[in-house]
Length: 447
Image (cartoon, rainbow, N blue to C red; front, top):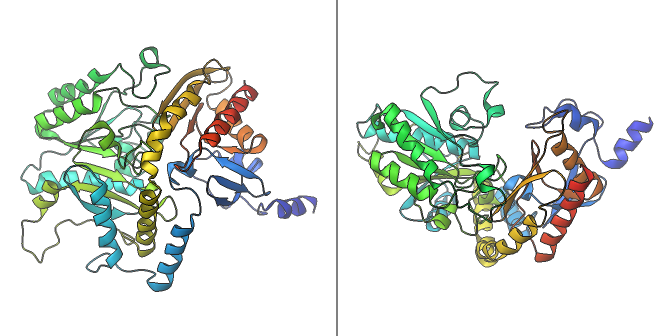
C-alpha cells in the first residue's frame, strides 16, 4: 500500500514492466525510474515536479526548445483540419510547401525531398535511392555500400549494416551483404582536447581509395558518413577530410550521402553541416530538428541529377517503388513549417554559431577533472570521455546520468562512459555556464 501511494504521489505508474524500453538498461531504469512528465523551453519537468535543465535537446532533436507555442498551435489546428492524407497517389498542400522550404535551405542543387518518419527510415531511403539510381542508369553492378567505423545511421537493417557501432550490430547476424567501412576519424593521441575540428586526420579519407582498389569502383554505389559523428560520442571531422572524401567519390562515380539527422537544422551553426564544411553531398538525410521533435518526421534531400535520372520512363509509371504510410503526414508537415518559421524568426542557426566559442570554452574548462580523458566540442555539441570503472564499462556513465537527474536537476546523454551535450538552440549564455557547472559537479561525484 505504501509503495502504491508513493508511486501515485510521484506520478510513476504502478506497473513499469510491459514497456520494453529502447536503448535502455531496462532493469536498472525500472529499479530507479527517471520519469518525465512535462517540458517547456529549456527544461523538462520530472514526475515529482522538479525542473530539469535539458542539456541534450531531448535526443538531439528539440532544437527550437520544448512546447513552443507556434508549433503546438500548428499541430492542434492541423489535427482539427486534416488528420491524415494518403501519401501514395494523393497529396496535400503542406507537403509540397514544406518540401520547398527544406530544399531552399539546402546547399547546391539538393532540390528534391523524399519524406519519411525518422532518421532510420531516412537512411534506408537514401541507401535504396542510391542503389536504384545506379540501376536506372544501367550500372546495376554498383551495389556495394560504404559506411564508417563508429558511424550511427539509425536502426534499420541498412542503417546498422553501414553503421559502425559494435553493440548496434553484433546481435543481429550478417545484416546486408556487400558492405564495407572506412576507418574512424578519431585518434585520441593525435586529437585530444581539440577546439572544434581537429588538425590531424584529413588523410584518413584516402582509405576510400584503398576500398576502391579492393572492390573496384564499378561495384560501389555510395558512401555514407555523418559530417560530425554525434551518437558515438561527438567526433568532429578533421579539417579537410570531408572535402577529400567528396573529391574521391567524384573521381570514382560514387554517391556521397551525408547523414545529417543530428547535425541538420542549426546544431552546427548552419541549416546543414554540409554548408559549414563547404561540401555538397549527393544526398542529405534529416529528421529530429525538422519538427523540433514535436512530431516524428524524416526525409532525404536529393540532388537534381539523381531525381531527373528517375524521370525518364512513361509518365504513368511509378518511378521509385518506395514510401511509407505516414510519409509527409499532415501533422508532421504543420509542425515542420512552424518550426522552420521559428528558426527563421529567431535566427537560431546564426545564434548557435555565435554561441559556439563560449560553448567550446566552457566545455574545455572541464579538462583536469577526475577521470576526464578527452573533451570534443564542435558546434553546439560536446562529447566528454570518462575513464571506465574497473568493474564495468558504462557504469560510470550510468552513475553520472543518475547523479545529473536526481541530484543536480540536469539531463544529458550518456553513451557508455562518454557524456554528450547538445542543448536546444535557444540556450542562453548563463544556461551554458549552468550546464557545465552542473556537469563538473556530476563528474566529481562519480569519481
